[in-house]
Structures are given as C-alpha cells and as structure tokens.
Image (cartoon, rainbow, N blue to C red; front, side, top):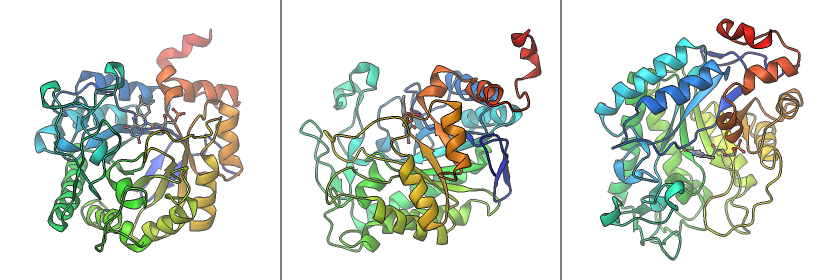
Length: 355
Ligand SMILES: Cc1cc2nc3c(=O)[nH]c(=O)nc-3n(C[C@H](O)[C@H](O)[C@H](O)COP(=O)(O)O)c2cc1C
C-alpha cells in the first residue's frame, strides 16, 4: 500500500515522497522577475523535504498578473532568475515545477497586504483586462474585453512560449493554472462564459481553450516530463462548473497528455459560501482519480501528517499539496516522517536538532 513517503514517479521524473508545495504567490517580484526571495523561499522548502516544489502562479503575459508584484515568465529575460532557483531546488533533492497562469478579469489588484483592491493606472495597475465574456468580476472591477478568436490564439501562444522558457530554466514539471476564477476557469465556467462561438456554450466548447493550450504545451514540453493542470473542481454554485464536468474534462485532458489533476475549488465569483473545514476539497480529488482514472493531487487544509498519510493510503489521491502549513513550517515533511515512524530524512547538517 502506498503511503506519504513512498517515492512516486510520473513519466521519467521521480519524486522522493508524495508531498508538494502548493503554488503560493509571494507578491515579491518587480516586472515579474524572480529574485533572492524566491530563491530562498523555494529552496528552503526543498531543504525542508518536500518532493515537489511548485512556484507561485507565473504570468504568461504582463496583463495576466493578479498583482503588479507577481512572478512572470513572459520574456526570455525571466529565465535566468528562475534557473538559479530551479538549480537550488534540484540540488536539495526536490523536483522543481512552475505554475503557468493568466488572471484574466481578476488581474490588476493590490497585493493582499495592501488590501487586494482593484488598481488603476495611477497605482501601477492596468485596465485592459481580458476574459471569455465582457462581464466584470465585481462591482469594483473594470469590464474586461471578451477575447477575439485572434486574441485566443495569442493566449495559447503565450502559454506555449512560457512552457519553452520553463524548460530552458530547468523545470521538470509544469502546472497549468485553470482554477480559482482566473482566465482559463473563466472559459470553463458557464457562470462567466457566455460566448456563442466555438469557445462557449457546450462543455466541449468551454473546455476548448484549455485543451488547445494543453495540446500546444505538450508539443514543446518533453515527453519525459509531467504536465499537471490545476482546476477548481466546483464553483460551489448551482448551475456553475461542477464535479461532473471536472471528471469529463479530466478524462479529456488525460488523453491529451496531462498526467495529474491538481484538484482545488472555488474563486469564480465573489461572495460564495465555501464549507471550509479540514480536507474540504479532497473528495473531488478522490472522485476525479477514480472516475477519470488519472493521478490527482489533493489540496486544502491538509495540515497533519496522519491526515496526509491517510489520504494516500486510502487511495483518495496520489500526492498532497500543502500551502499555508508549509509557509508556517518548511520542515513539515521531515517532522511528518519522524512522527509517522519513517527513516530519518532530516538533512545531516541538522542531526544535532535531535540530540
Ligand atoms: C499566500 C497564498 C498565495 C497563493 N497563491 C496561489 C497561486 O499562486 N496559485 C494557486 O493555484 N493557488 C494559490 N494559493 C492557494 C494555495 O495553493 C492552496 O490551494 C490553498 O492555500 C489551500 O491550501 P492550504 O489550506 O494548504 O493553504 C495561494 C494561497 C496562499 C495562502
């Protein structure tokens, strides 16, 4: 029976355990560049023992940043800083992955520590937002432009170019961000996508943009490397995107070369009541895994070693992604191994921690 510390392999990439650092914006970049913060923050989680270290959402276009301080990968100049971080993560035994993202109509907001409000040009923001349809996210948000067919092709190309740069930077995993109400989710969800062309209406049409991005990325991403997609398995809203559509999508994505669905939820419209409690989203990872027969990652209030181990042992998921718990404690994987009675994984330099 697999357990939390059982090594895991996808394609030709091996992970030392089933623990991943969930993507988390650091709001620390200038013009999208990775810097010392990203290096130390992400490499610390590799030293801490995670098997997979994912970067925060990296924007494939400048207008696709959630905040002006987001990480980016829209130009070749971004490669060098990312490459340094990747090399350190790999030196310390974890696999480095990057989350490729576009915020769509949820772009141009202040970072949470500055209140998270919509920014205009005078505040380093930008008003030229895009989405599937010309519907604003909130009363405060600008009305986005509904992407033209030509605009859609440019977005696909932006993801493909970002994937090529990710490879040059040395990443071994790409995760495409199609969750949390950002651009690709804005195409998936009928709550936002009111298009009447080939990219709106039926499930087939609403999933078309994501499928075309996956096809494009797969062509430039080595066959030996895994490709992940993060989705919101449900909008938590009647008549919205739901688990049945997620299972159907996951099945389609599998046939296009996606290896794992990272199963999160929510974010498409403001003011939704999400029943948050420990492991509140893991049921979705479990159903996608079983019904679409694809590897899954479970995320959301997974904080205790027993809880994480149990999710793997009961085959609810193949990996767990931890967010805030790994912010609080980068050494969580080592402590979890100790607590669960596994062989000591602690770095030799820290041996005396136990004396
Ligand atoms: C500070 C912060 C930044 C986040 N940024 C991202 C992000 O860039 N991409 C993403 O998919 N999710 C992001 N998330 C969501 C986390 O990846 C994770 O799904 C969520 O926090 C739930 O997991 P947790 O309960 O273990 O924290 C962020 C969460 C936090 C707390």
